[in-house]
Image (cartoon, rainbow over all chains, first blue to last red; front, side, top):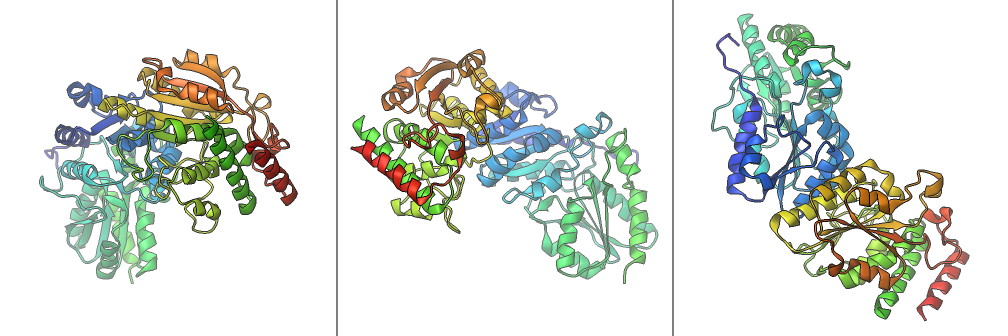
Length: 316
Length: 271
């Protein structure tokens, strides 16, 4: 990424799309936990004050209320900081939303390490693991503005619960403006035959930059943007293993149970190939911004490229 | 009213039989709640077993989901599921597992089992009706021990803040929880002033007295701008002498001898 590359906070794409959807569908309501500002719901509140349900600082109730609103015919987008939404209300997500098949859209805002310096209490780097263990709950982490908008439109049209994992960390545009989101389908952003790098969320643009660095060394990496962690794109993973023989995953999440684990589960069942899983290495991160911490944990473009080179040495 | 009492007696007998035959269940809390369930399904709720999802139906949430079998028997009696199906309670692949599942059992609105879930969901339902200007009402039945769950108090605050006078919480106050008496565990007494302090309208009734239940649930008992809490004083094991008010009957299963004795008592009460 050069110095002029513009970076965008995907929350803007999320709320812009949500407001457009809400204009067309009067049953759409927003539910939040005093998080009007951090979820950027100020515009929604100003336009439809009666359609914003702010339960106060009470995440368990927030998720339960979301389920009840859906039962009563509303289409709720439940928005809260991802760390509290998923951690505090996990049992409500399981019982009231996923198991009850409530048509609720759970929107985890400022996920991953977006709250960097605020520390591990405010990081949401376990949410893939917690949520992808639940049946009937698609887990989606868009990589840029276009995918965030597309995934939000998809959420409104999809009959059933899902989790949207949204960041506030600036990312460049990657996908075209008219991108359409397909659940469980990865996007092949770059072709290559030496290895495949799989990423999502704020890691996708770093993976692309790493692939550029590798190309400078004569290594051609396929890059898959895998926004949907569950249901995972088994076909794309199988093809990556078959065509490139090595897979490196990158995620803003602990290496225990996230995207890398989901990919590995597919790889070991089908065509085992050498893999590396990049992420937070199972520790409570030290103080630092999200971008600092991602670099610190080896997920700068240079760090990713270095791990890719090491992985290639293990390739048969 | 005689009809309601007769129905409640029939539901008690069928519930007892099902728990005995399944060899498991939560009979104590089922007996305490059956009069309330009967009043709801046969006198209060605007629900239609032929159209269980009609949008303007009243909503009922059994938050004390462990007493699912009492709900199943009530739903069977009301025509939501076949009466014969109660015999499948807890059997492999039965729709009727130990806690109600709304994706499988018509008439069930949301899945419960973990305690402290029903009231928040009911607040959302009532809020939906309020936002839509709809007249349907929401009722939720919790256990009393269940009120130890903090999520209920989150929901209690929200219900008052939202002025949900279309919401009725009924607390099955049988004074016993799984392991001991509430008073010896985490005593919630006095419950009514706690809810009043949270901004609710509160009434106390004998929750095993059909007239009292029907009176408290009447639409005209609504208090404008306030959610309603009915503290229903009940007896765990109500109607069966040796179970009544005894902690061990939370989920004990009667022996054949006890089953016959209990059935005899319930049949005598039906006369």
